Length: 196
Image (tube, rainbow, N blue to C red; front, side, top):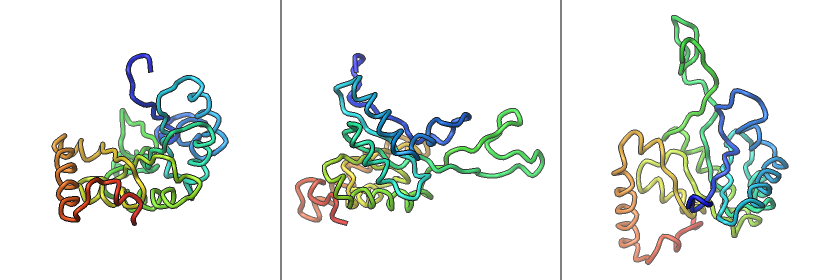
């Protein structure tokens, strides 16, 4: 906050932690999400987003706990715990660094159906109706972003697609959404938020 951040995202979802009790292990326990969110809330006045793990059956319990702890919004979904392959010569799973590996996080377009399910769950949860949802998980073009917005997202985050296609994807997202709004005769994207 003192260095000019506009918001804080609490990562309760990182699958790449080597020790137990960190990252997505926290995000799977609503009581811990609430406790750590409340601790962050006591330390700042700027908005807090709780970034939740998809490595659960339902995301609403953790989202509701974040709300109780003082979060202003939810960021979802983070990557999915995965092993992306096994080297047939070394027998070590990928990615491998000096012959060592660990379970990691999988992202990109393949996780979009899972992300849409969780955003729909939270977007239709009456206990979360006033909470901001920042959606991510497989967004590659404007129509992907639109699907998340129609299920209740108030903002979109993009990482994997930027790494694959470069920052121009952001301009494409904005121009595509603007064209869609013009075709539908809508003034702003908020008019279709949650319509799906």
